[in-house]
Length: 617
Image 1 (cartoon, rainbow, N blue to C red):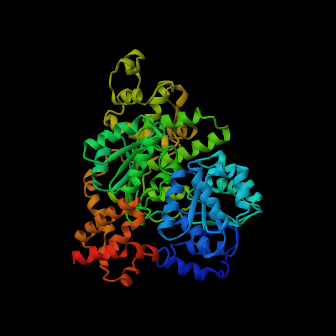
Image 2: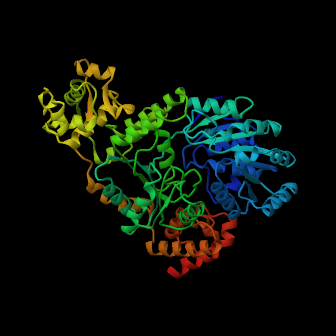
Image 3: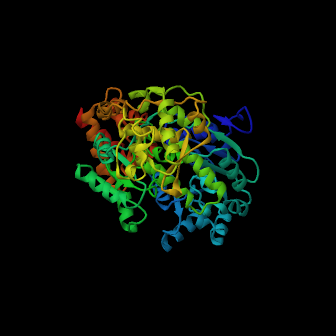
């Protein structure tokens, strides 16, 4: 963990011991996750805080715990109504008084919230930024003794962030209107420029800054060039039968089609995108949140409001918009700390479309430049010759990481070869054709295929015609992707994807520089993917797990959650049920020592689950 203001941590806050006690009695956790304790201590000491924490690292607990330890109200700024609704429900299952104030509330709900604020009964109030912009909301909160302002998804305040939202720009005014109340901000992704803008817009002065590592070691990273993408996607999802997962698509027209394909393969899949009717979106999101084994096929409109801990996989059927979006989206898997799987499919068409979207966006030139850099970083990750986790962490400033052993390149292997000759052939084909043609024409030229256009432009007379016939078209496409990722040439988006050689490409073409590439003759071993489901399950349920009992516990959880109208994980998380199936607690006291079993949940659900354990013994 890096702290930008001081090298030594402050002494423990007076309330830290009480916070640690509540961590166990309310949340059922034996101790803090890495980094949480220092942040909670700083907040309890009265400091303003900016914390950049990996997805799944437990950001919410860092403001929820101080809220229930100290007197007074904590106002949480949250970007989505669905997220607020779920977080309020989760707090109430723990016996914590919480409410949400947003445009979806009825008049009766708002009256009840005002009464609780007036009587000092609320510990946490979740608000949307647009609701906070209204004068009556500020007046109400000002009179309610707000002790802490917590801004979630704080990168939304920055134009340099990958998910800028103009509603966040007024939060500095909100802080001032609340008499410069103590302010804390959290995000999972923020580079130096984004952090600087968050500080400038949200805080009265420099806050205490915590930047934790970005690594999510429980996530398996995998990427594959598109080669029958329908088959690739179906194979990946079917390997996770019975698991909850998310499949991301690049446009609104794709989710329904791909969900239908998965349903035809026996997968419980539903679509989600912004073009759907609001009721349909809500129904599908609720189904995903509340049931086990549902797969949502969605655009990026789905995700920021999701805090489901037991998502076991995230697949990208198309290239994400940039590396930070990729990191955020895969981070929705495995938030319970158990193993989870990711797969990203990509192709040159994806790269071309993403660059065109940047060029046609209304952003200013500085923002477009930053957007291109983030996209280029993702393309480089796709074509990385070595450990993907090393490449990803290096982008976020964590150089020197060891190979992870938990990505496709570490597990399946990727030989690196001298690719100088292949690069020179590809670059020569571009130059010989006047840098006027796209990938497929150049591939046909190199493989010696006499297409209509090859004949029309008399390119079969060029020295490069057939010079690469020892490789097939698929291999040459892979070489062009690597040439692009290495910055040796670019596709000119506005001119139908024609290729142009860069300055560094000319150095290679002239023999002044060498190029290392992944060996395009070697494809990742498909057979290794087939047994991944079994391997993941074995790791997730490591220890002496009674699988029959685990199934019975999950069935009981589903019955209880349906009766209560709650997501299943809010009853008990998968990690808790796995521990029940391993340890088989026989009494309430024994059950209270298991992960995630706080006093409120034990009192409400303990007897039912103890009965399931006794019946299965």
